[in-house]
Length: 225
Image 1 (tube, rainbow, N blue to C red):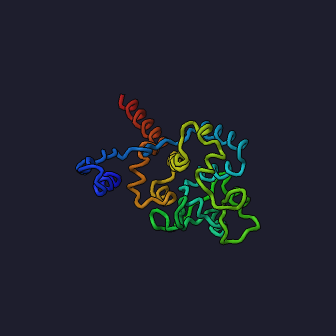
Image 2 (image 1 turned 120 degrees about the vertical axis):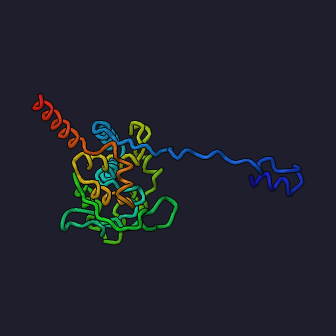
Image 3 (image 1 turned 90 degrees about the horizontal axis):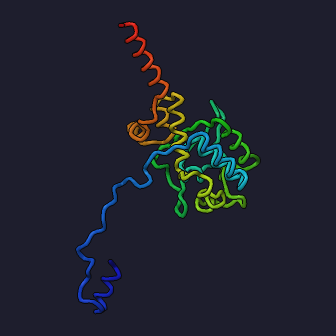
């Protein structure tokens, strides 16, 4: 548009042919699908990435266990790791590539438990460092960059078509399948509302509860007969 405006101002063309046109509106669905990793997909990806870049593979595992957004991982400090009343991280801030540090997306500070190998990973990269230093950095100590991170891991070749954001979806759906209540999952994810969590993950909830309910119905019908 600006190019044609310049051409009109300079007398190169009589009018701007784009003046009354509008770009088509998107449908809002791009990259919105919830596609968590299947357990075997994640394990095979992680094994391949450990061969390529062990340090960054640890970060991948940490993202999967905590459900953090990329910017939240980047902004974590050593002092954000706590052990009481349980192993956890305090998520206070976020920093996207090329932007200044800011509050988390919801504007809230939250506590996320460290499960699986996450406590050991946090301890490994925080050992002997000051509280205000970034917990996770590049091998040279520089701030993480998402493009470099994925390139070092050969993400396109190892991730089975998944996005890095699907690690967050994997954490959320695994918590729900382990019968963690929706309010707690919402708090751990840092969602602004519980309804957002319900809307996003409604199809991944309560598999055990569904099975138990179906079994109760079957027993009731068998008794009736």
